[in-house]
Image (cartoon, rainbow, N blue to C red; front, side):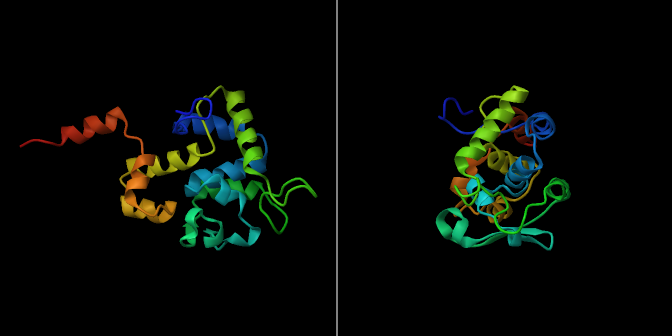
Amino acid sequence: MKVDGNGQGKILSQEELKRLFTEGLLTPRDRALFGICLFTGCRVSEALALQTTDIKSGAITFRKSTTKGKHKTRIVDIPPGLAAILDEYQPKPGAIFPGMRGVTERLTRFMADKILRDACSRIGVEGVSTHSFRRTALTQMSSAGIPLRTIQEISGHSDLGTLQRYLEVTPEQKRKAVSVIGF
């Protein structure tokens, strides 16, 4: 859990996610921003760099030029939960998350962090960072039995070792793992 900017962002529970998206995040823009981070497992900077033309035909395209490492373009399907969130938010053509008029072209990471901190404060959740959505998404996929190689394609991690550091293993998962051993 993150404390004073140190450590990894908290992995959010289903209940915390529900409260965050219903009570914490107040605007359709804010729900769209963090919904994209959650449902695609992307970094907040990748979501902030999106253009309206990057969302079409039921998928979001994270362009190579805006991804960490700039290794390759990723295309992630839009699941129904994210589609519902995006339907509420109708940005003008251009940057999906525009910044202050005349000051910044798009919303900054600093402002995204402030929006999230305020939302978490409203619902009383601590240890959350903008990276929590990425860690939560990847951990949920892993817990659901999605192969690591598939998760790697969605997340854009260049190696499995880095991806594995993101994933949280619960005590229940460990109990279940050892329960299958035997003869």
